[in-house]
Image (cartoon, rainbow, N blue to C red):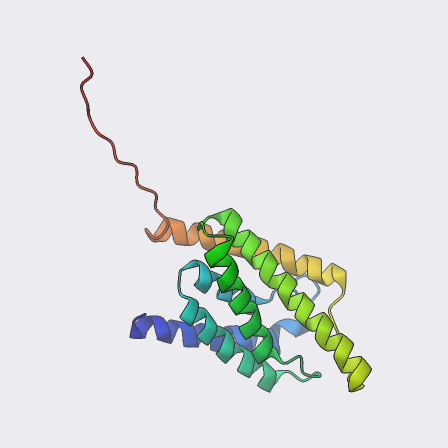
Length: 177
């Protein structure tokens, strides 16, 4: 990846972490369920940049851990784990780069993230008496709908404005006579 690509990764991590930790939780109901960190991490994985996705997840996780005011959910480890699972899924199961594979990858990322939060909630409340909250299922469903919608729009815009996902068909003029 070029220097410009790394700068984009770092700036995207900083902006998305600050949005998710400091701004979006204070918005009204449907807007506060937008969680841009995992969506952008999926986008980096789909763009075949696993190192960029890991760096993005690490920077965003550190910033979320620094700026969140509630009990910690270990965002650094959570985002790194989710991105590693996404990279493994994209290289083994969801190998094609399509809108459907991108949607499935973002749903899998959200489910792994939810599993991590549930485990931290279980062990945090039972062993350490911490008050770690997991979002309700309605909010989780809204988040998944936002994820699918935003990732579909991002994938289509990338396909329209770049030639990254262009399928070329060669045409031969043959005479059969």
